[in-house]
Image (cartoon, rainbow, N blue to C red; front, side, top):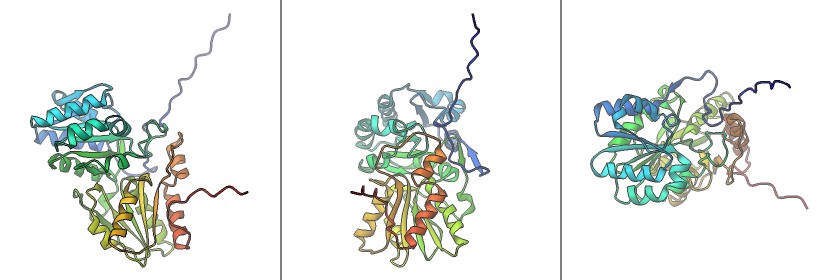
Length: 345
């Protein structure tokens, strides 16, 4: 009889992988801490989770205010319906789950229970876009496309811990339903180095530049700033317009920033279908502006599973990939999202 060798337990960090660069400044669980602090001042703030408090940073609020936290289990529709009922009686709910479940699974409840009556319910979606390596079941690459068409819904895609900390009280104060694309865990701190203040519904120019304009949201604003700094060494002048509010879109700021003498690229952690890129493109077209315009975003396909840095390189969200796209656009190559080359005969 032989004795079995104990097996080493295999673990993966694909689900909660961080997109922060090595050595980058970060803040732990900025959403959870901001919500817990806000609840100290506002007793009507409540938190709900669909069995994912730890993975949406709602656990910070839960530990600070256990009597105002509601664990709804794996029942996202029930969670949003309960949040609607709480809002009807004057509470201000923040309901957290993964973006894929809030959008694909519970959209009807969000639309008819929350948005149609205009209730102050704040839906918090973790793992937006390509922020997990777990594959299509958890990669919410189309959440903006789904939700932009929902009447009366305000949508925020924050860049970093600074954005999140300021967005939480602004969303609570806003009269109506909101959706926050949550960056969780150790979130980079970037925007404190700029003369920036989050304002709901407003875009902010973080850098000026004569050659290229990057119009970005979410974590791609961080990448846009990195790309701009890198290209500066090659005498390429890159402006960055940060758009934290996807809906309502700050169309006036976009039209002001876009000029026909420079390349304009949108940068988003979302499919190129139905997100920031198409919203900006239609804004420019309706304003009658003619400029070189393109999109940096995820392809219109189900994405692979794997290590997050590898996936960001593969699908064009890394700083290296963004720099390459800008150079290609400046060299006269097609700047928009490239189509696959046709197979040779």
